[in-house]
Image 1: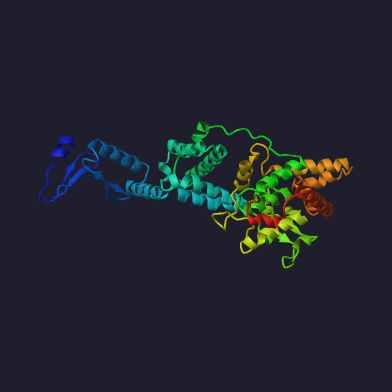
Image 2: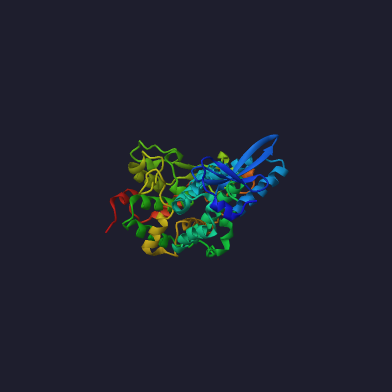
Length: 428
């Protein structure tokens, strides 16, 4: 058997030669002076050889350990050379399987199950928060401290909910990697308890006094915000839909309005058909046109849409981002506008829904119209759990819905400037 001293002292000769150890292991010394460990064995009746690496990078003890492992494989009727090749291929594939590459594969696989808006939000959050830091790192090389470092950066901005969502999405990428053999652990799951707890959700702050609500619109529309943001805010207030629905509003969703007319606001049958895929619905209803949300457009709502039309009619969406015309207005644009105008903690974009519900239900109660409560719920897209009932109610009470929408718009815009004036910049 060899000793380490013999291996170290072996000198090159005129021809390559071997220094045998045991069990088929030997050290090959070339005439150029290179030394490497080899194993001679037989598999399926054929003599084969396996290389373990160069000496002294691979020590005698390590070479013997690899020989013993090869012998165990042979006892299990597995070819050590084939197993070594498989390990090399797996290692090479894992090195190429960066976080970004695997994340995009996972997203492509999952996105058909999601609403388009959610699918876009998922990949955008990974692009903005993770890819710049870990995108080029092989998935199997990422550990819990690296994941936590990314999430801590998000936390330092105060975006605790974002950090929570990003962690969940990173974890899903690792689980996908585990299932495909790329990695063996999910470090994103282990850091969950190391994150700061997100604040408990409370009711969205909303004003429910008509004059105060007019004040919100007046203050924000007299600010220096962009016309796109101000008109989106006004339309949000007039329709009481969810903010994300306004942000993704596409021109193709408008029905019954003649834009060639000098006064499109005189249209009595203007309708906004929000596709079910953009509504807050359970997944199985996302592709069901039965659950499209029908929003009757008041005269003031059509005025707001007509005001933005010269700016964005050539785009698919009404309210694009200031930076990227092909993307919707930022989800924070209207909320930040309200905060800048002094309404932080007092009224948020989602608050228009509570305001509409409270005020219009109170007016209905005073007028003795008890049936309006169901109509108002329908206008807020509170879809009943029974699918048949939901299908029946989609277009129900449309005449009354138009009356309520117009009554709400008249209340809200009393004393406000025409929508077209919002294109002229801040008023003094």
